Image (cartoon, rainbow, N blue to C red; front, side, top):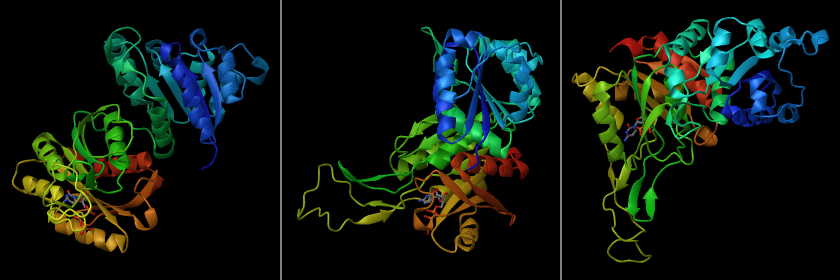
Length: 408
Ligand code: CTP
């Protein structure tokens, strides 16, 4: 990936320390990073820290290094601007088109993608003034991420916490390659399954698969930042951070996942089965650990029985009028991916099917993905190679363009 000129704007909030990790993340990805803090940000983190991490001098005002005209140049040269943390004050100043310090002047000059990651107390976030400013920025194509829910500076907790630096970097990179996220899913309810299901053999062993849950989590994350109310029913997802804006329901077995998906499908507008479902389970789950050579319940031959096809069952619910949701599945194929995908779409009756070529260890547990998004009317959209977040953003754009999110 080519090197980007990334400007990290840092406003004066306690979460300013997290900007250090964000700067590191971009630097490690090979980007050139310029840090532009507000004067108040330097009350929390010293300029020396930002200079050492970025390898560039750090100024806050428009009257420093005037000979270099940097209040114009930094914005002109930027490929991506990320303001994190963005306080209520800096959001207000950007929305008003102010240019009274280096950060706001830089944002006003820039024509590149701008991503704002808010951090403030819940009352300030909910205040009509802030919400109006956020709506103004979004209407101008600025991506204002949803803050996380959680512990704030004092004893209180609620929405207003800065997203984790890695999540901000991932989302900002996605915006840089696929465009602003916008709010097309405002008011929509999205239900996503993610990860692999596991079927117990005995208390210590299980039948499972290599799914990491990354693609399902990325779909949930992008949908939440596009304004949807998102629930993820997650099987095994290794040590992945859960998407900040989504409710996560943990399950283990296929039948648990089926129950949780079916109970939520009637309220959903879009249902996505991104989970890698264990197709079979042991006919008998031993209640104590099986021993080698045990005569009655041998480990050498485990009898398997077929699990329900959750996707097929959800399609039946749609056909019976139990849900009006648009239903999307995934197809992991190792050969003839497109051909088998088309047949699978017809067989499963889903509205959409994302076909992945998983030959040679591709996709499972990997950071990148690509493939085709097939729709029931015969449409084939190519999903370009990208991170799982970039793929998720492309999938949501295709769902929105086809109107699947508005059918309900
Ligand atoms: N799926 C499901 N329930 C199952 C198996 C799969 O809901 N018991 C869903 C997956 O979440 C995915 C889609 O069906 O969205 C296709 O999964 P895949 O494993 O590719 O297909 P299978 O139906 O298992 O078909 P095959 O193994 O024959 O390729």
